[in-house]
Length: 371
Image (tube, rainbow, N blue to C red; front, side, top):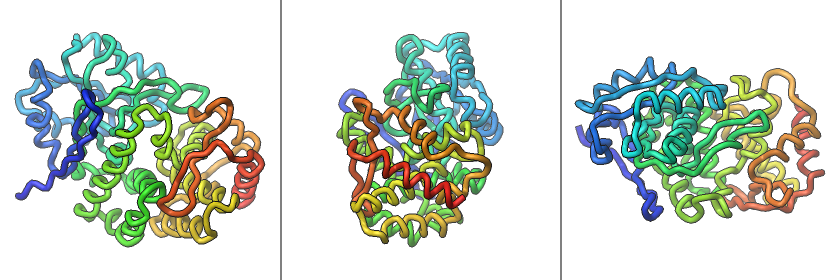
């Protein structure tokens, strides 16, 4: 079988690394990770769902590299102090040393938590990301953002800690429930919307085939998303400027996730998709983009069978004022002003702090009225 694995290099000087993308990487995990090991053992953090499905395959793929693993409960609720401290204590009990490698084997929750654990363990050990969800492969496994949630909001506790290597095995995506796959697709669409109109055109044409399991389409979508993220991270590793573009849709999304208690009422990528639609609506309201742009965003999300509006979130939601207050706790606050990522059109996003609260309140109010 021809090896179709592709490599995207993330150039960050001494913190540079490769993102390897292709089917069958799990079976070759040992060969991929071995060059980074000082001794042939790894400590794996995973969740119970991924562990049950794929841990044996990883163990086999590691060949003669000894593996010890801890499976945490699946779900966003794991991304808090209790499970984080459990993970760190387990790594210490397993005598993980500074020269060892921690493996984050799972979706975004595990990647963020394991990366943060690696960042603070013995003041920093190296880690390898093996993302198993579409969302983690295209977004959270790349760029070195690690962390956990607080009662005050999402991802407010964490560190920038780049992985040593990312292995994105697209073959693993076949075991994702349809809803989880589409949640990850919310982040894929985001890349087209923020900086590549041609990629959004491609997604409009190929999104259904990609969702149906077309491997070539999946590989292209993951590679293009990772390339875009890598170039932005290279320019702005710690989010002083350009990197904030990656948060298109997230200011709305994080407020909605907090309002729904990080529960399965709203998955992260679903919140991103709704957030992107609202960001384009806000942009159009402010006269920044045509009326056609938000309609096109919503039409594509609908065609993919995704959530597109607040009306698609089950259960009660706070009013517009309360949602605005939740946005004010976002990490993207600078000097007390909320930074929004708005758009002049598809593929033309930009960062601004010059958004009248009244306009945001109006967009939220109207979205709530459609429920």
